[in-house]
Image: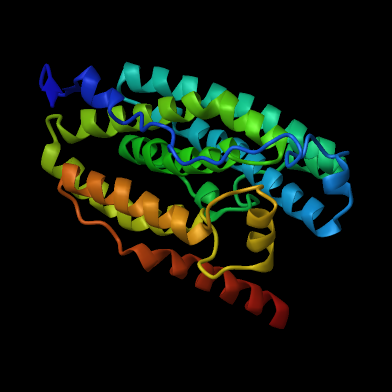
Length: 284
């Protein structure tokens, strides 16, 4: 598992490159929606709104990632970790450029506004947090980008051609981000301060995982989610995607690192807090 005392063997690192799901749906040309001017999209105001919403959230996660990673550069005490982070940040901004172009084709004014969104303004709470340690940066890349990988698998089977192209183009980048975070975590976890690092990792998991699990969306089905699935924009429910992520990856990583992990339903805390804040603002 280690090389030279604190380095991860390459085969262990690459084992984190989880393959694409085998059950991704394939659609014939008649079902595909080629772009924002396709009659199948323009003929349904509700579906147009669904596609716009998922495109905005996807693009925003790319920009949000690099925005909270960039201030963490000075925390990197390992030259290799700093190099990895630079590459991840660069790729996230390339992803944002492409994602923002997809939004621009659907809703130009919103695409322009998104360029100026900063920490505290992002759609998902995981991208409004602050990274304070090298281990925290590793956890962000390893676990948040795992959600990104699940999201791209949705786009690989999407009927909306621009999202499908996005998934195909950037799948391998997400694997690189996951591997980078995994390398940072294990280099620290099996380094000279192993006990301290394991305790810190466990604390971080309880802080971050509820927000990360919330990235999949609310538990209960909605009209929007049903429409997205019926139209083939996505092919798995929020609940199914989150369950697979937790069971197949988080649980297994918890065992590997010998740390406790929050319960699967911890993400409800994030939505409860969000709803409470909205209610407070309305009554103010």
